[in-house]
Image (cartoon, rainbow, N blue to C red; front, side, top):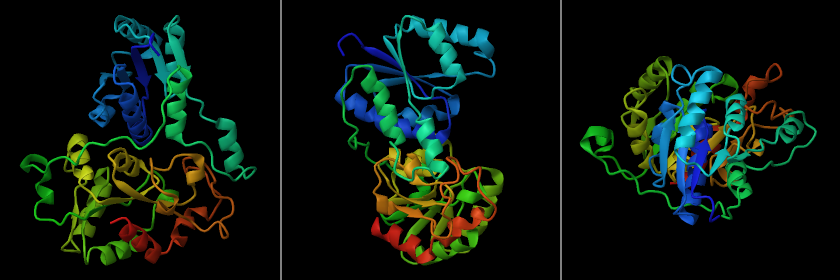
Length: 338
């Protein structure tokens, strides 16, 4: 729209949800190159937006600078000085609703999270695909008057391998596989013994890089990597920006229903995802991946799947559902994406 030249985009957390905004912003920027974007997010997520050339990032420091209601008032004053024409709220939480009130007079559209549809899905009332999260993000911009299709945008070429960040990749073949075997909940995590079998089969012909988060995960991955000549752990060794550089060089990422899959997808990398008590019908599958890349737990044995949106609630015994995905199916799905 001609009267909107500067949009504030808000998504504060979490890693995977923030990563899913990136392909949307890339597609929007390619269709609307003259519209400036300012992204409000937390400091740890700022590197995710580095490829959105029309965007700048302001940091949402809610622990100190913008703490409490008075802090949000201070933030709203800063936002007004940016001469924002509209706000695309891709989070729709208490803080952003307070900002909506403080930014009165500025066009403000918020994501429709489809809570009632998600409740119907997890309660078993309606087992059918819901609108994807990236499309819900895109709808916010459409409601502001912009018309654009969420086709696969042009992703940046893989980051050039340089000594400072990517010597871990030196000498490897072009078909490097990433594996991120952990998730926030055990109900979404493939058993480590089965994942070991997957790794054992794939590493015979391909280099594998293991991704993870905390200290405990890093220790487990390092032990796993030491078993095989072609397996290496990058967990805890790089900054987020450098890790994104590495991910951009992967041929395929094998991930749980977790942030690593979304980070790979936002970089144009193919992603195979393993699903336990959650389900892609909820709209949280990695961006632009075919249905065959979603490997699902056996719903004939576990008919209440999806038991929740995030995997934190499930009936007794359902934490074992992800074990019904055969090792052979995982290996085949990864190889089909090489």
